[in-house]
Length: 116
Image (cartoon, rainbow, N blue to C red):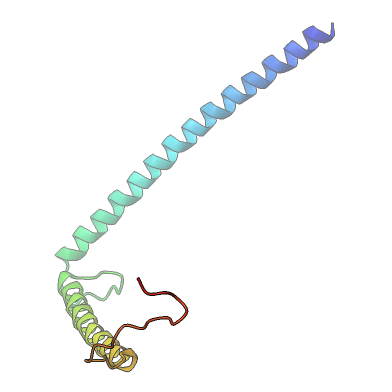
């Protein structure tokens, strides 16, 4: 009787696990579908935004010229910051470098060690 009850509970658990897995698969499929729909709408908005005039009153619409201008500004800023970084690195390197000795010193012999 106890074994039959245990088997019945185990079968019910397995059925619930199968149902949960099926629901997870359906949720994944629904999520992928939703993400695809959102991406399609975003692409459509982008394409429509390119077709509109530059003087558009909608601030969310960004034209290709403003994107190009932002890229040029970013490139100029990157170039400036690279120059500043290079300058700072050279200053740091010049502060840390020690003067090097040009003369060769004779070898040092330990008086306690017998010479061979």
